[in-house]
Image (cartoon, rainbow, N blue to C red; front, side, top):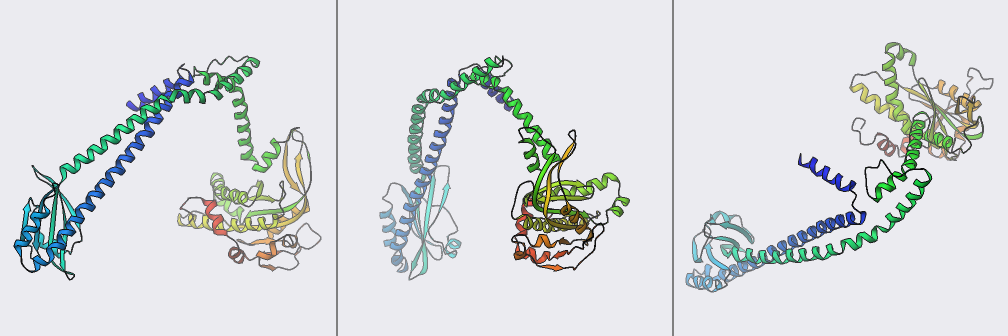
Length: 488
């Protein structure tokens, strides 16, 4: 409920009729206060850490000093010398206790207060310089202890205890000084908030003037805006521009769902509208067809068939986009992808073969996932051909479609029909394209007569495993599947 009230208060402040300069000055003041507060907290934290480290160095040094001085008297069992030693060392006002124990844990010299520990177990751990904070109803102290050694052999342990209260008081004093400095800096910077806001407001005034000019032409007075300040006037005057942009985005989004992005951009960017006709273009065509689709359709309901195809085609469109391909159309169980059309690409054949291998690898991963879930799977065959084709808008003035036509397209479909599942076939024309033979290994299948053609075709089977070794396919797959763990 409190969070709701805070949001409502912030909304009222934003939509109030207060001048922008005043609002900004308040926001700047809050920002500066927070920033200086964080800076002050950081300085205090750093100073506290430094102070604790400094006290630790002092305590460790005194414990080490006492351990070195007590080494020979303790070994010689000169307990009088040890008593004089701890009495002399305790002259520091911060030190409230010093003790020396032999290696059996027997107290041999003491002065002032002492914490009660199991000294024998402490000696057995062979401690380096360490410390322990302890407290009683009347005392708050920190004890530093160091092993007494003679020729590297432990002979006892030395303890030095400091009164923690003066150290804490010193720390509190330094903290108060830093807090006072921080508050002073905050107050000083707050005085600069309004002049800074006024200077920052200059561009807003220019926007208000431009907005007023627009509203005068379009009979808009700025009414209906939730804001009552200058920003409200600007928002109202530019609302018709935002509406136009939103309409264009919706059209582009709708186009991108039915057409490839490259084709959608081409249609929207034609200033004189879309017309029938086209032009000759050189590129590659890829046909990807489901193997045994009739049998699959017979065993599944139409909705299940659609869901099955969509799961695969979803990733195939991503593959095409990553390979600079354009999805021309979905023909039932077949997908047709263009390369080098409508946007020219001198590597269209390489991109087409890369896309084909990726589609087969994506299919393999999807099938593994579906098999683990005991769902039906499908396999694809892919044919690729390259050459010159007519690319443009075909149909009628009332209904048209961007596509490619020509013998190159028809032959691609025939080549695809020759494939077995999981295979990629290309034509001789595709292999002759720039850069493809360098990265591929292929097998000639001889001269084959296909239906509807007088001249035989000479397809080649791509060695996909060799192509994968020559290409960074794994990087493509990671990008295609994103962060999904299902297809790893």
